[in-house]
Length: 353
Image (cartoon, rainbow, N blue to C red; front, top):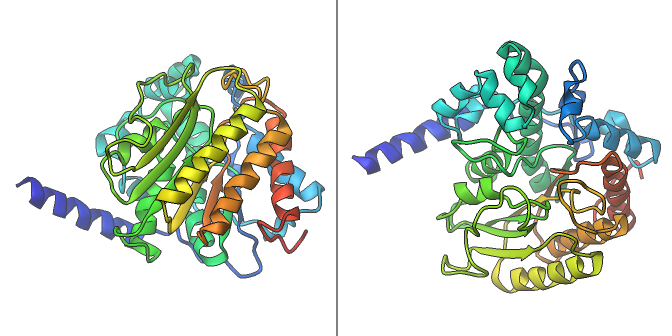
């Protein structure tokens, strides 16, 4: 009975993916940079009640244009994820729970949202998230076509199929991988790798892929901060070496951080041959970030991103970059500078640069 239910669920998932418009056609004159002005969250100043910079995504794009790296006409506009799209990974019960303002307030960690009508939250908070989810899913298709893609939003790594949290309402990474298995010629015998370098543990995708032998995860995070979960796995554990977890404490310096990353990428190079790489590139590792509580410099972020893109190139593997966490106004500038560095080093190709 359980096996029949599982087969029926798989058929429903495949039908939903086949009917989705998230892989909308993209003309060849576009760069694989995905962004929409609908990403940004602003409503009566309530966005200032959370430390997250909810206009970060728009400012990254503005900096890239001002720096001459990007022509705004070449940016790819994603489609918003629909309920049918989200049901590919999320339970009906979880999506229904988002119709309650209290649930949204808990997930976003902004208590006053609990007192607002839910239709306002759907439009002003959850719609921007759904638009970013569409951007993440489309990024994988563009990465397969062009070798790389950067969604200027996304990276909601605390959300799993049946629970949100930590400002993450939808599991865009899980959804992206399910679409890739179904539509991008990546079979379940191939490998998708997640490199999660946000300061926080990627507990959402780790939960969703815990027993999936096609998914390999490298996760580096501060154990002193949210979600403060017990490690899902020890270092290179029994699950067929499916995950490398590098754990460190608050106030880790740039030098120490990059040394740990170098070791982790060496381990990954020895054990993994990915067909697609999802890179969750949170900038909450920056010195001064109130939630990440690390001491990594802006130049350290550039070196980090460069190391991951070099790993991708050495493995001849398409890479999707997501901007994820980052709770200072300076994060947008650092991200734009890092993307510029990737272009300068020839690790990505922006015709307008």
